[in-house]
Amino acid sequence: MTTRDKPPGFRVRTALERVDRLLEHRPRLAICVLLAQVDALSFSRLKTLLAETDGNLGAQLRKLEEGGYVRVRKEFLERKPVSWYELTNAGRTALRNHLDAMSVLLKSVSR
Image (cartoon, rainbow, N blue to C red; front, side, top):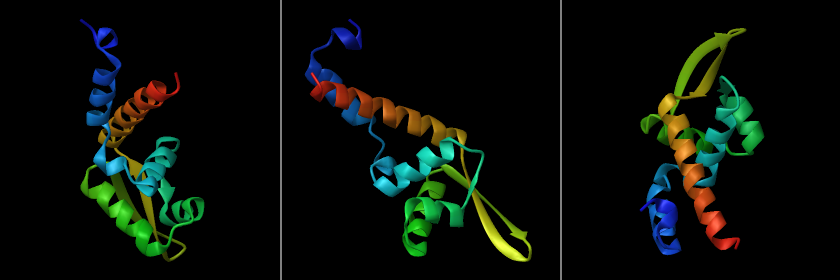
């Protein structure tokens, strides 16, 4: 019996188990979605796009970095420090799985 043949409650429960706890928070999900579209974004660009404070954005990026979802590269441009963030392969996989699970949940209520 495939997952499609199981009752709807089973699919919802399975999808809920696949929701990524790290990506449940809007800023972290938004960071990963933005980073999935580019090679890398600077801290200042992420701050502008997300309208987050330095402290909140830094804390969210740190959590994603600790989870292995993003990688940071620091360099100097015109004598100013710049932090570049990119999504790791693990981050891409986690984002894809999270969005797939959310899609199942959305479909379960849109009937």
